[in-house]
Amino acid sequence: LAPAMLDDGSQLSPAEKMRWAYRKASLAMLVTSATTCGSFYANLLSIVSVVRGFGFFMGTLVLWNFVNVLTIFAASLLVSEIYLAPLMPRCWRQKDAGTRKHFHIARTC
Image 1 (cartoon, rainbow, N blue to C red):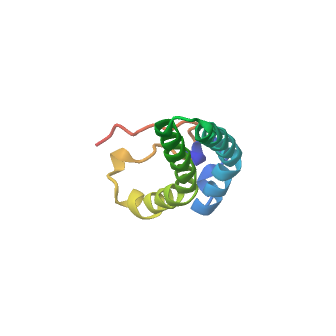
Image 2 (image 1 turned 180 degrees about the horizontal axis):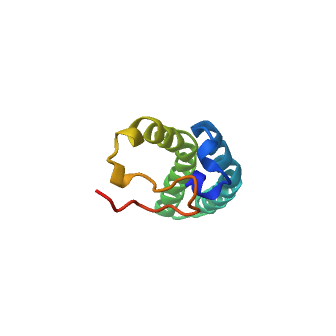
Image 3 (image 1 turned 90 degrees about the horizontal axis):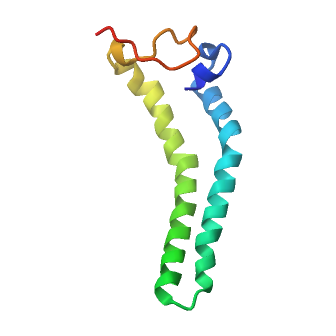
């Protein structure tokens, strides 16, 4: 989606596209993950042990998800774009990447 959102996105390398995406989304991901994690960890103050366990588990899960989104998911996107996209049939690729402003699937198979 980065080429569709950037001006002349077809000229950018995958690393530059990821840098642009992180600049745009990292603060929002941090704030939402921190507030969600904090609200679940607030359950650690409960006197009910099941609620405490649930709060700890879910807070840790949200924190782990944030770390995975920043590392593993980004790496998988780069692997997909660099190594798997050239192997896809022509009908699955982005149509007119340099001229379109939105992502469209070509319907010519």
